[in-house]
Image (cartoon, rainbow, N blue to C red; front, side, top):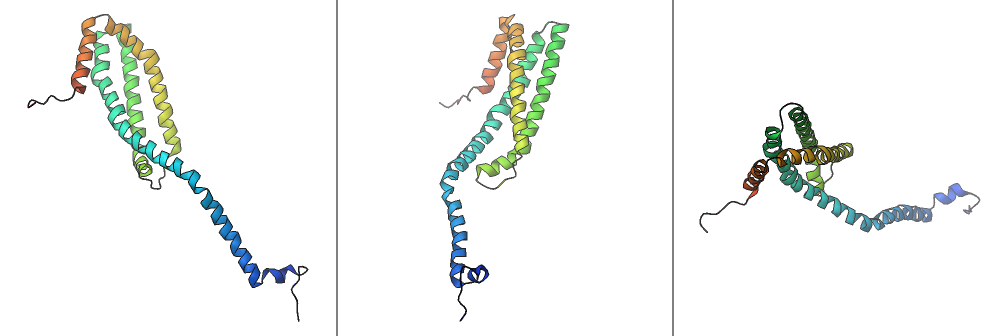
Length: 183
């Protein structure tokens, strides 16, 4: 009778008992993966929440902010700027900021479909590079606006209180809740 021994490993690997041991390898691998699941649930939920909040925020706040600047702030500063170098400087800044708005909005529109999928917990092909480009583009845009354009706007509009008041009124009227005549 042929006895299986550790000296003959090829025969040991083909035994029915070894088949059970081999199954354990796959089972243990799958259980180790399953054990990682709790650590992944919270980040997945956070990803869905961030995507959903960003979808609402971008359309409601950022697009609206760009519209306010282009309808009210930019024309008011241009109209109040002194002819010559100051007006040319303001026009160049307005042109730059408006172009940046279009770039940022186009980047957003390219990401929006996949962000909606993320918000629903679905697989997506979210372009991480484009997302980082959007964020860095907006950071640079806001930094330029905060350090260059808005201080200059404050100076220009501050020369005439009526110009600042007119801008404030225009913004207020656009964003004031509708008045219900049947109160």
